[in-house]
Image (cartoon, rainbow, N blue to C red; front, side, top):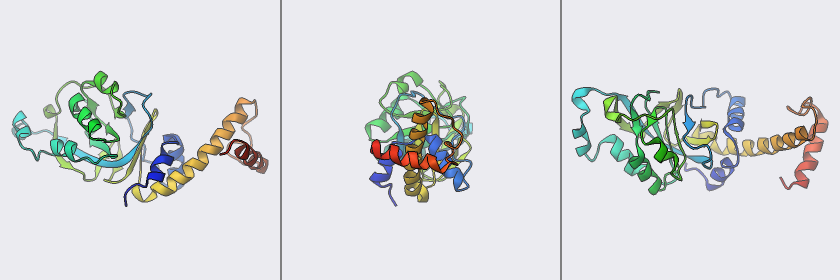
Length: 238
């Protein structure tokens, strides 16, 4: 089932930290992509369904520049087929010694209306990509072409990215802290809870900044905290 516009909008108002807690309550402890950071932390929150690309270790007799003559090459096909509003997620085996992609391919994704790009490897042209109006996440910059180490073998199948399992259609949320993968069937539920959690966290922050202790406030073990929260919420239209 496609990601609902309302759910997408809600997820754009919450953080990966809040979503991680909501997932933890449901037994999911390994949804945050490890070692994946934004090239530009000032980019807006990234939300979209995963469209994936999987690399395996390159074998020299099968991974020369000649492979790009084939229009069905998995990397080239994936860049042209990733849907508008999706997040392009690349399994580079956590190996940033060679680039997962570069500025031209990332620009093509941006121009096609893709919501963002994520790899657990690296990007070449990192400064150029960081300057694009396009959320992009990687491990670290990497100049060598992907062909030196990575061989693209499958588009839009299940992958591992940053030690997390990502299935096509799972919902990717990215912010300044990194990227988290929300199982597709939980997206609506997690979005609703995360919005509620964010409202309470904002209330808590206002109380803490006013000098109040966190005892009984965070978490809300004192029933009076919920009474105060309800009043704050009404006053602030939250």
